[in-house]
Image 1 (cartoon, rainbow, N blue to C red):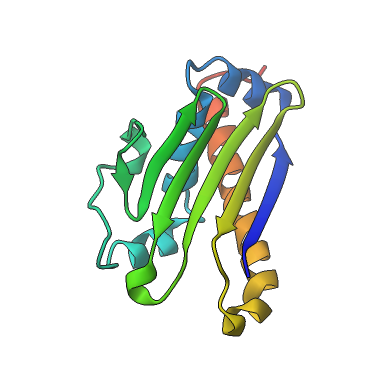
Image 2 (cartoon, rainbow, N blue to C red):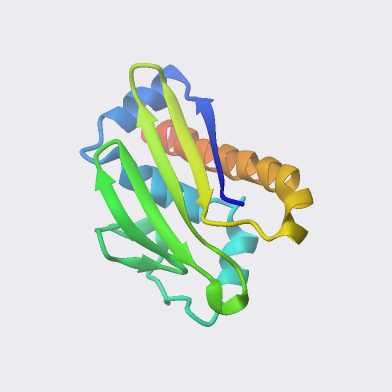
Length: 155
């Protein structure tokens, strides 16, 4: 069974303006997502995966199309959206994608996931995945809010 989700959170006005001021907010979001404290345990585990790519510090990564970071490969990149694909079929898992997007007009950031299939044994775990995805999104938002605060973007 295929699976897709999308979660969103609203940024403060100051963080929204700070993120909007960057030439590529999608890169800022990817750096924030993958370098967040919330993502740290997954980052450590995935660094051990057989097809994991050693990556420069996520906080400095350029996230150009075709670049691989851990198990994600940048497939689509625009200033406001990035889609990264991954494949863990060698571990008996699926192929999928992670999307990060920003809508400055609504002050919202989005994080979505798609899987080509969910094994029957994993279906009961979907609610846990959804809570975890929201937790990771909050980690990204916290990173963005903190970066905006440190930059002096707040009044």
